[in-house]
Length: 355
Image (cartoon, rainbow, N blue to C red; front, top):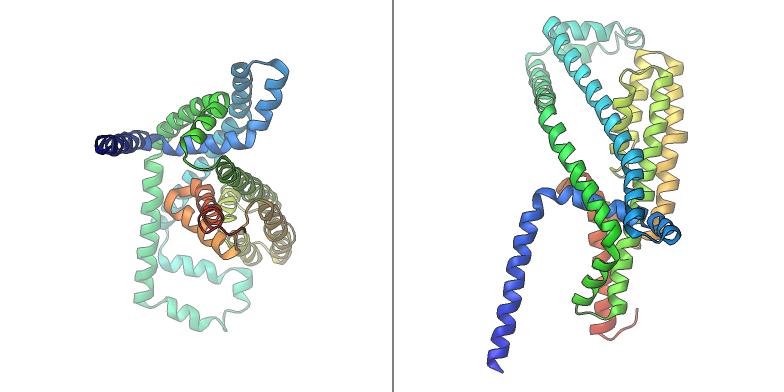
């Protein structure tokens, strides 16, 4: 009996050791693998539909993988190249401007803006403060840090491009095999988990619903907001509209203000720089169209799949984003919704209380 217990402990320790070793080996590829898992969850019904018609899982998986590559990876790659090009242009213009102009030249240009010019006397104390040496030093240091940051990012562009190309290859490879062999792998994992089948299905169902809710509610809404923002910025005449619309897309994931973190300052900038109607138009466009998606559509969709309090969802989303990057937008809510699901199982199975 003692020998069997020692054997069991040794075997479990051996499994844990090699499991952690395997995870450490996969860590360099964890981001594309996680993205493959997310996209598989979203697109698996399409694979099921095609497979039911042609009865060939490998061919079906190849077809869906090709479609994802053509209509998701390639467009995202093109948009990324265009955004990087605009970022390079912005960086070059900023560097050139501050090489040719002094700090006082910038203040003089601000004073000549139509809206500022009309209130120059009232704003005199503000401009007097900006002439102070300590303020000038703070601005100069801040600008140097921004330009250095942008310069470093641009300098690493080719390295990042090669790295991302490899990540795309890992994503496609993982996506294809998960699509084809995912159900068999999932069934094997279910057999290895020492829990009631009903509880295991509940946990996996929670992960599935949460992923779909985040994709449709957050990513889908943010994409629509980015497109609407691009249209609005282009109508007003804001330079580098594509770059700003991509920034708006990412800001849409940051509650509680979301996309308004970008379009509102740009509306104020348009009001000051271009004219009254441009500022009013962009303000109304952002409030009535862009932020409407944030305030009504997103909560309606997410509420159907994520059954946790809003404050928990807030910290799960922001915490996941800060800790894991963009993929953390999925991991954060999944971790907390799964934890809530496990709490319910514990309450029902261990404490013998039905929820």
